[in-house]
Image (cartoon, rainbow, N blue to C red):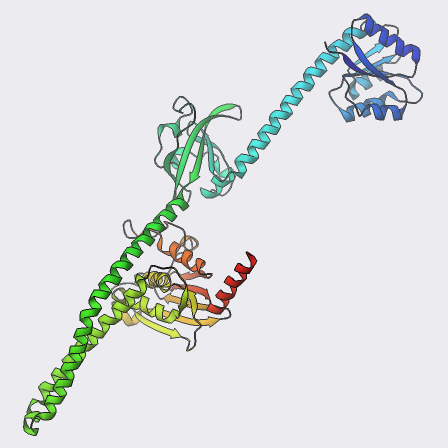
Length: 514
């Protein structure tokens, strides 16, 4: 046994020598310190001791106060009381208060074995308690790591979920952590593999390989995750942990990049087609103007009788030329609109949102014409915004097309309306696109900007349109919001900083970064 660190609380030199001599006789090696005053006791208790031996009766110290002071410092240090004579009740009281043993001064023969036993048990107990505290601290640290993890973590036994970290609770849209009681993994994992279902040999030894899965949320939506599985001991029993990384945003950005590439490709194609059409279109318009001028000149050269006889046919011919010229001008306008959407650069320029909104409405005219009447409410003076007209046009086209799709078919166009409104509002330009369509249910409304969320039938929508709209508007320093009522209609509000405000923001941001 290692040397025993002994704190001896004793006011008698003779009695102190008896105790130490008995310990030496019992071959108990001690390193001792003797105290006999309250001040000495307080100072001594700042050190660590293996055992305390205390006299029962002392003029300056009360054994009960000494025991309280020792226990206040440590519950692990054994405490032995030594005295001449004492009543049985006093002994019982001290034992209940926390003393480990009691010996009479006239019978110290068992002091050595008692000290050896109490020290051995005290050291073992202290070691157990240290190990337990270390385990508790490790578990607490691990729990904090798990709960702070951005990953989704589920623990299950034989398919029954027994734990979910806060991020999993939130992402799977459980009301709270208590909602996992009784949850089955089969209701969450839509395309499981063997490793996610069994906590035994199906878990691959070593570093687990990630697999991609789709998880079902409690509201019926799904998320894409990358999952690893591993064996764990959870609450004293073997279990399987699923550590999942949410890939939804990654997939969203990948899809958004595909969408941007597609738009860029369409833009390049539109620019090329526009260029090729514009050249012959210029000849057509010029020749139509030439023919109209020549007809007027020829009519002027005809005799009055011939002019009077040919007048009805001449009027029809002029009307046909006017209609043809108007159609050609319409083609030119469409080409100009296509060129607006064909620009692939993101450089901000001064943009009149009214012109971009009109171009978007013309692009969606095929969808709108048979369903609704467009009502424009534009302020006479509207500040320009600093934006890319192609990206802004993408936002407006999406909103206008959605408005058209929300209107019922088979109804006279004058009974439905899409209203376009533009005005300045403080430091912003506000663009409202509203319809008198079916409206959006209140339980769906908060989610319409989420990536991949769509109420359209499979194959008719990716759920990316409104998410991309919000990203574009946010990048321009603005915001987009929606109000809707079922059976009444929907109103989207886009707010963009006026060009002067946007320029001031950029200047301030640049200055702050210096």
